[in-house]
Length: 439
Image (cartoon, rainbow, N blue to C red):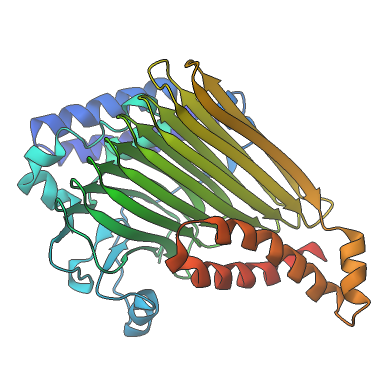
């Protein structure tokens, strides 16, 4: 299918959205128009585009999707499963729509449907919604902005320390037809506030689907956020996600991304350190098997002095899976005394698995401490032999070595409260990977 033909259903969907959006604020209508003009101009990326040279979008572009996005009624058993391990703060998004009746947060945390916030919090949203994307308005983010209908709006008050992690569960269920969902979340943290966010993407059984998700995060002066994203979509799903983070003076952003699901996934995280003394820590772990494609992209943009950033990603790939990592650090001329480091390591569990890693530094300042590196390896035969000589089976020996490789990035992360959960999910996926690797 040609790129133009692939765009047609999305352009028709935009005409329907525009027709039904006459009551929305003028600024949002203008934002939609600008975004879709960008999407029309850029079109869907191809492997000829440098940023997509290792990830083929043909499986998405050649698929037909339904745009209705009906909201299913969830069973009590499903709800209990989604709420498992959540405390007093649980926010549920179903097929892109915030489920108020099944959500609850502690005092001081404001959460509502994004569509409602556009009306009642227009003065707060207008300066930010879609503006965080200005430094890198890619086609999928533009498409999301043009077609957004609802999502999740969260605002944390100045000086508030949120006592328990906020669990955001994005649940997708395409009951009757292959569907596409535009998931849009906006989160603003006030001055000197502190919160931990756990963002989980999961799904029920049903038809294949395409999730195009955008998360915009604004951290005001002195705000501190711990963020964990867990992607566990269905094995035949498509997951394209973009997180844009804007940091003010002395703010801190610590993130961990665990990716184990989806047939094709692209997880893009862009962080702008816009004021002095801002810091960020980006960690990630992806585990693929069979024919999965797991693509992680990062951009840390140091714009002002005394900023710090540290990136550490690992990949475990089995079967015919492919991993992609492109990590970019930009140090602008005014960003003197920047301290920025980046590392990517991957372990191939089968001969057919592949990985493409490209760490990148662009430094325009002269007083900096920066480093980057990448490494690819396989399970060491002598280590497996050592374990087998002590009565451990080959499969279990491989699992133990792979677990040790994955544990390093989890232990290294500052998100201590998620360590046990992450290790459990990794062990679950490792069993699938090792089985796949033996096929």
